[in-house]
Amino acid sequence: MPMIGGDLKRRLLAAFRSESSDRMRVLFADFTRLEKGCEKDELAKVIESSYRELHSLKGAARAVGLSVVEEFCQTFESFFSVLKKNGLV
Image 1 (tube, rainbow, N blue to C red):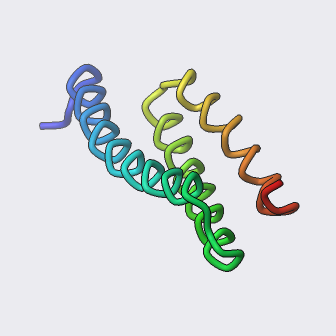
Image 2 (image 1 turned 120 degrees about the vertical axis):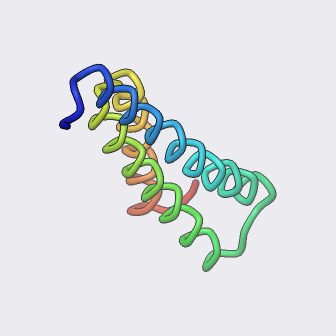
């Protein structure tokens, strides 16, 4: 029996909660590393990791219709995109 809209939406939101929790743990760890300071090689890896996590979180938010989360992630992702291109100032 196929899932109906409400049930599907609940399942998608449950999956989003789980995925976003995992991604937020990675972002928290990345931000902690940035706050403490990193060598140049590690800095590039942390920036790339944060960028990828934000990009994935943005896509997941879009998939479940959480436009506010999607927009927040897009703004933050754009910030990390600048860091990737120009380095951390």
